Image (cartoon, rainbow, N blue to C red):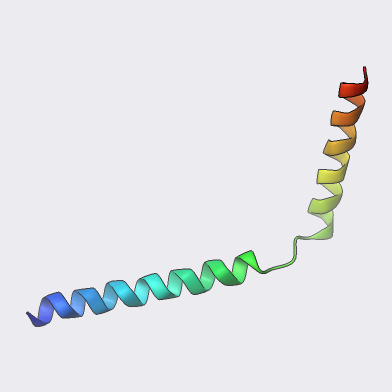
Length: 51
């Protein structure tokens, strides 16, 4: 039974680490360069829709 418990503990630790990493990434600020590119794409869409 120890192997099963060890496996469960390992899986739980992996899950917690993955959650922590993804949470940290999700909280990072979006780079200005990327925001600028998105704004340019929106402008292009508006121009296309206006034609």
